[in-house]
Image 1: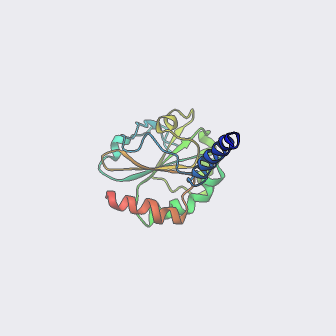
Image 2 (image 1 turned 90 degrees about the vertical axis):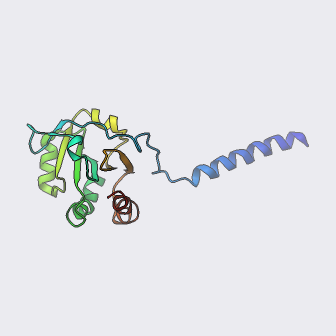
Image 3 (image 1 turned 120 degrees about the vertical axis):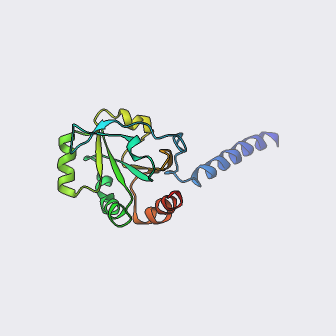
Amino acid sequence: MLRYLVPLAVFLAMAVFLAMGLSRDPRAVPSAMIDKPAPAIGLPLLQAPGERLEVQSMCGKVWLLNVWASWCAPCREELPVLREVAQRHGVPLYGLNYKDKPEDARAWLARHGNPYQASASDVDGRVGIEYGVYGVPETFVIDGAGRIRYRQLGLITPEIWRTRLQPMIEALQ
């Protein structure tokens, strides 16, 4: 009898852990950066390489940092939502062009439209690493004190904007 109970107990324990894993949202990857100060960017701007994107200059306002690349198909897919966020909702939107050639990024923005107030060029991915970027697209909500309040893995859909980002931004303003 005991020889059947041990395998049964092991099986039930594995089934419980499997059920717990399957019930979790795979996009809900925790970020150690939540409620921490946004790392400095200080990278050259794509459209004005002589200027730099500085986090300190955005203190006092809630803003979004969208990590994108010209080689990223979902980045193009989220562009209409980003344009609406920037234009209709008046949320300052800045880009971090991640591991991309600046000339490819500029051509991509010219071809598909530029929703960003400014976009910095992170050619080697150093700043992306400081933000804990897993891939593109990712978007960070940064409050007026310069702290990261939310991180969206993957593209922003109209539903994600309406249910997650917009309420958070409105609460922070």
